[in-house]
Amino acid sequence: MTSTQNVATAEQKSRFYSFSLGWLGLLALILLWQLAAILINKTIFPSFTTSIVAALHLITGPIFETDILPSIERTLEGFLISAVIGIAVGMLVGHYKSARSWTTSVFDFLRSLPTPLLVPVAVVIFGLNGHMVVATIVSGAIWPILINTANGTSTIEPTMIDTAKTYGLKGRSLFLRVVLPAASPQIFAGLRIALSVSLVIMVVAEMLGGGSGIGYFIANAQQSFNINGSYGGVIILAALGWIFDTSFLMLERRILSWQRGTVGGSANA
Amino acid sequence: MLEPVLSINHLQVSIRSRDGSMNEVTKDVTLELRDHEFVSVVGPSGSGKTTLLRAASGLRMPSGGEVLFEGRPVTEVPKGMAIVFQEYNKSLFPWLTIGKNVAIGAKEYPQPERVTRVEEALEQVGLKGFSTRYPWELSGGMQQRAALARAMVSNPKVLMMDEPFASVDALTRNHLEDVVQRLWAESNFSALMVTHDVGEAVYLSDRVFVLSARPSTILAEIKIDLPRPRSHLETKQMHRFVELQAEVLERVEEAGRESVGLPDDL
Image (cartoon, rainbow over all chains, first blue to last red; front, side, top):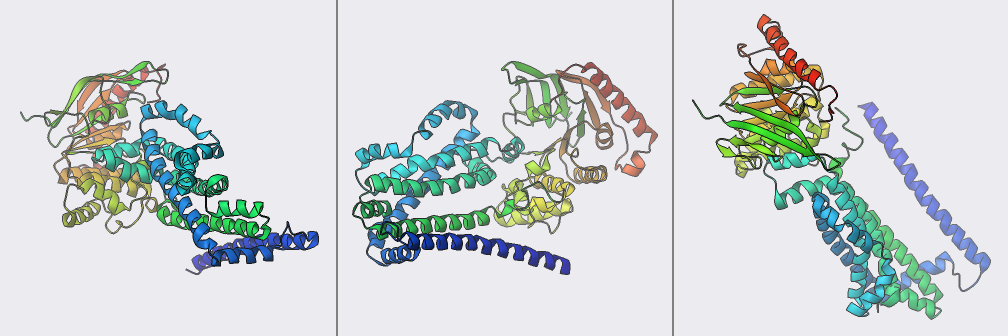
């Protein structure tokens, strides 16, 4: 038992080291920023502390409700819609070969459209508002989910599908109880990409015509020479991205916990 | 005479190859599986054993002939048929515990009964107490026993087995063969097994069919008149076992010689 305990502590130690090294890197970057800002000493380049103070002002001020919350809502809404449609269509396209050959070129064309180009189209359809932002997010974030799901589905072991059919799992229960979990490692990889894509598109769409939101706020702050405010907005965005990704990873680790032992082959076979 | 549980009549199976042409794998196979009978199909590699089993169980549409399960044509895997695949690690669902994997075979039963049935099936294959483990926590032989438990829990009329012991080591194989033999003796299902292992086929079966090379037909039917129950130590030393094994092996090698020059990727 002592040996396993030693292994555990060694593992904890190394995890602690990589964890603290990661924070050290961030700290170094912040120091560099602070130092550079002090040396350059110009209003267009505020220091880290100034920016952090500005960010805190934004979070505690009215901007939180008028811009930050709507941005979070739009990002999550766009991401969730993309996830539902992307996973459903991806599973169908991945499972049925005929569906794949019908849709490949259509999807290849659609997903190679640069998303910012779609903003004017979305503005015409939805107007200058949150719906436009959500629609634009979906138009870009759906692809990594759809493609990954289709890939994961088409590479499921045929024996697994045969097994499902043997025990009468067909139609919806085949997709929900076998295809979905079997493809879930790849689906999650796609979802993670899509989440960060959603955040990026949210900002771009809001800058170009959101009417409100962090992107809209940053664009406005820049144009009205509210330099500190725009830097504060950027810091809030970075924090949001980090929070989204970290919570997503936590969720993924929970749901895919069964996968731990299967990665890299069976340990006991 | 009683109606056979499963009859395969003039079955013909073609597979579309990558260049789009049709490739005849099974030309004409006829065999029947009677009530509580153990039948094996052996053949050289490339004789389309797996294809035959998939077509016979409704996982693949044949291009000719028919399969009848209790008198009714088979178009999908019928209720009352269970299949054990060679690749247990791809057949057990890795995201489910052993107990939940086995429960998939028992979903016909209502909930309180289902749990006891799963526990019983696990006990039958010697996996009592493993129901909360994940497949990857078990050895290969244990995983295949879990797959067997899943097949048994559905209380099948017919158990189809596709090279069920090909992916485990020799000792585990002997053990698994005896597990299957015991399950078969204790229950009343009929078994159809395809294998390339002649000794295994003779050891377990009542009748052994030898498949020719591709496109395959039945080359020979050999009745195995060894007394039951059989054991590895005693049965395999019997003169009759050696004789039968040699007879089957001779026919398989005959079939193998024909296949020289044919692709054997299936």
